[in-house]
Image (tube, helix red, strand yellow):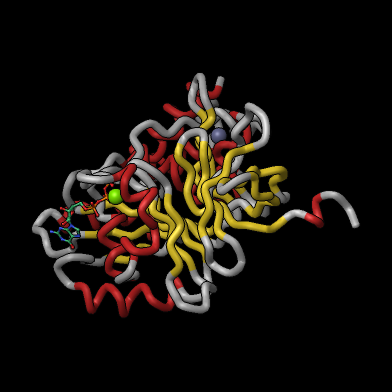
Length: 297
Ligand SMILES: Nc1nc2c(ncn2[C@@H]2O[C@H](COP(=O)(O)OP(=O)(O)OP(=O)(O)O)[C@@H](O)[C@H]2O)c(=O)[nH]1
Ligand SMILES: [Mg+2]
Ligand SMILES: [Zn+2]
């Protein structure tokens, strides 16, 4: 028997700086520390661990199916691993940044993870403007689900239940979009699930400060992962020449560029610039592309 096979298996359900909460196959949650200085596991990781005293030590992280992360100038921030889908949640209010939304979708494409858009707070008058801003994303093939988690809970549950069934979904988005409200709607015992340790770390706060894994069903087949609202969303992990391939509305037009290494900025015969002229690609999408591209070169 190999050394790791003798260790217990576990699932990382929360991380708090230098320690993690690992869940056993029986559903028991234990505080664990990584072996050594590097703390490189994230929520969703399958790990091998062993008990030392009343806490555990993570000895090994199993290979990941995928990993969603952002990479800024100085640091890499992993969101979660081994995901079936990402639900990028924005709301009619507060007004969302299209650049942040686009970056989250690009990160998902780059990690090879299916992404959906949830547009929350459909009850507010600002919904029309938000819907219009998301129209290009629907047109380029993303599913956009309009919901009202607090205002129309029954309707929201009915709309999202089939989407969530049997899958591990990460809910990602800016602060105040309603991510935690969605978790609480889908999972009535959410507060109980996160346990005392996590609650203590989040106590008295409305805003989420750590990524947390919640089971949706008693059979523990489906999960929802809550995450803190993000602001920065660097994409330094992406090579500049790959960027347009990760933007679905750029795919077809870029086939018509005269130069194979076209940057879609100023080149003659650029299919992307032609598509901006006709409106097939919006000005704002091209501006976001140019902004990210500048950061990558
Ligand atoms: N009008 C309206 N407000 C909503 C709806 N859903 C959620 N909210 C409100 O939006 C606010 C933010 O909700 P949260 O669930 O805490 O947002 P969050 O995305 O978890 O925010 P962070 O944890 O800071 O990232 C709360 O005051 C909710 O009551 C809705 O359907 N309509
Ligand atoms: Mg929250
Ligand atoms: Zn071009």
